Image: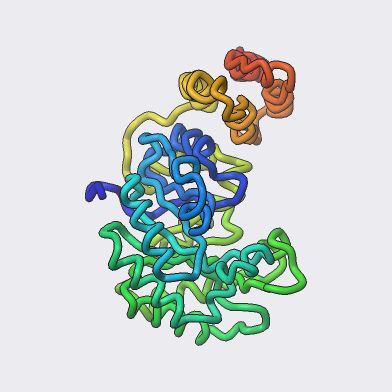
Length: 334
């Protein structure tokens, strides 16, 4: 691991179907230091599937973390080692996803009911790798809402050697709510994350859940080590343009929205040349779909999205579509 990597003050959450390698390259055009996380990859997918398809990434993505889903210590250790061999900077264990599909695999948020097993998983992973092993979790399960529950969970996992906890500050309702509802209905309790930091000052505590503005980030950083953004980073990615200067002291010039879009042209051309004609089925839309929100809040954003969603030109693999989308922005094209 590169010891000069910046701290995890800001990060983008692992989000299924969203934070794939193309999305992460796009986010890296906006912020150089913010930590990026993969979508959750199950241990079964790595042990029995195509490792390269799941773990391949671009070097410019660093710092980048691999999130694993699983509950067998030996399997997680094996997959963590694969993550380290592929060059990831961190391996994160998913103890927060509430979906029924994940529950059937006996991992995700339901693991919070099996603290000793999570401790065994973390210990096995730490024994297998030298990179950081972190845990992302909720503050409670179903109607268990006592702070003592999450405090005891963190304390036990910390005893197994974990030093970084990413706290999604909501309960996970395992039955009756969809994953989307689980991100919106259970109340946010940021004070639980604050209390964890007070009770475990030696640990790195990062908060996640419902955070949308720079002002909110600033308030959380007064209490905690880091903030992880989820859907706001995806739908309004230009929010991250100020992160490097504001939170990392990086004096490098901030790219404009147009410059960020233009910076994706070489990547799109390279990916289409590499994978577009080898039968893998890569289409330009696999990359550009992650870019639709970059003009959020700017006059002409709708025209930008419409142009960048031109199915005919996307199917033809025409990267110049990006330049035409920018040209339809009245202020940027002026």
